Image 1 (spheres, chains in turn yellow, red):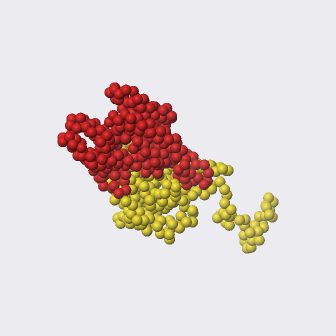
Image 2 (cartoon, rainbow over the protein chains, first blue to last red):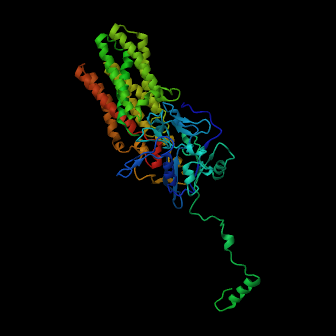
Image 3 (cartoon, rainbow over the protein chains, first blue to last red):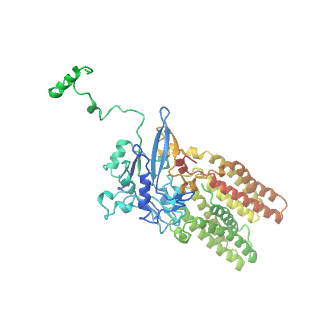
Length: 253
Length: 290
């Protein structure tokens, strides 16, 4: 049914760190790689090697330039996939019941055998998280790798979304955002995680962590203690060597 | 929004067809026998033809039957249920007129109101979209209903009613355009809120995710036709409303009546094209476009 279930206590989702994302698109590739051969219809490409290539992707990385009122502009890489909203407008508009939000963990999915490909859910989504596959004529979206995270045939470390597993920068985190004690919830609380388009009232589960300023030298320096000059009041052999070399012509105090 | 021709044809012709069924049901025209058959055939050709055209944009039209199931939440599902109900009830009413020469008044009124219900549910599919601020306004259902009943009045030859409704529809359309032009800004969704980076400074799209286009850009970002929007609005008002009214003011002749209908249809097709081509979806902000 396309009626939204009551809010679940478990809210599985992603936390994306805009400070550490390097814009390598590895998550885009691993997402397409996993999802084109697992859950549901493949993610087709049209004219993949032609003049005007186009294809279905569940995760895309944008890059933005942000110009503050003063100082240098910042370049920010911005991965975007389904935010698994608590108030998912894509679910309620579906005429067939193909779109649904799971009551047990809040994942938003499409039952492709019920999808008529009307595209209305993609219209209702403000984030561009849904793409109608041109080959299959059904709506594709991020499944939060539902076929990985509960998959007992995979080693424990692989039971997380493909994008999270592959990210070389550690910019993507997966967990239960409904649990205030979970590592992702703590991360969001400590780093000031935010929602995309909060004014749309969709209450996204996925959160984004803000980038830190890149053009300021922070006060602290973790290496500083190790780089301080050798003590001048040295003792023993090193102390004697220091004094002996300093007394030679060209030596420094 | 991409102005898909199947949806424009559906909105225009089904709107006219259900508008004609509305007036037939209410008894504004009460034909019997062969005359009634022709009236109902025209109305059903328009209404059903439009509905069939609307299935052309579906990825899996063979599963369309499933779309009747989610009427509790989905306006598209409600539209389907309402359309079948209206068409069945009006078929009973029409059969009474064609075969028995009797007017089943109560059934006609129910069918006529249900026909308007179809138009209203269609309008609500667009009105409910918070992602398209231009549509999210009372003028959207108002225009759908006004276009349907004014077009229906024109088709059913009710000259005075049609003229009044056409003028009213034109005025409301101008109001809808005028207020719609600022609604995107008023909704408050910007590149800053879309990326959540607005607190740092001015956000500019630096690189898109791909060098090529994609489904989202084809479906939601339509900038090409908008540059002619002002001329098209004038053409719309002229063809859909002013010219038909002028033609209706002349002493009645079938040639003028047909010209009025054709002019109205051409105008409404333009109006529907603008309805989509000018509507901006917030997802365009992620691409630095509108």
